[in-house]
Length: 67
Image (tube, rainbow, N blue to C red; front, top):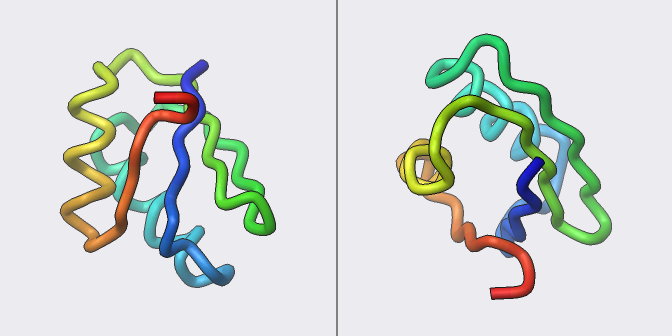
């Protein structure tokens, strides 16, 4: 599982957009989203770069946590 920080994820709608982007890339991915900390934990067979690209395509500022 990889933890991402999405700095401009501020509401439930943002969380749904990010979930949609990841699920479009990998329908079997699992996500755990924590809005207050702006963290998204993703378990996926896709690479970290692929996941970042999918989330950025939705206009979100995303980075791997602790990088």
